[in-house]
Length: 110
Ligand SMILES: [Zn+2]
Image (tube, rainbow, N blue to C red):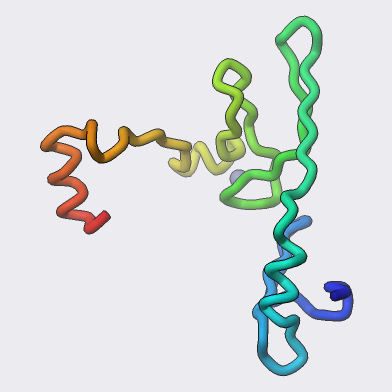
């Protein structure tokens, strides 16, 4: 499938969102196959350990670069999205969670 022949529903930077299976739309099964491989993400750290360059986009806005947290080795949303309140949160597995967490689960139907 040549994705270039289809028009995305919307796009933002390198992020393109397609509806599938409709008239003049890509087949979803073709899309699944095309998306099996993850994109290449490159991370390079300066030998001082103080600088880092990468090409990971922010998972929220998809336009800015994500923030690489070197001690944890994870990507947080970009600074602008973090100012809006987005962040990566690691929750405890359900078996280890306390009664307060279970109450939140019940309230928010997680
Ligand atoms: Zn962002």
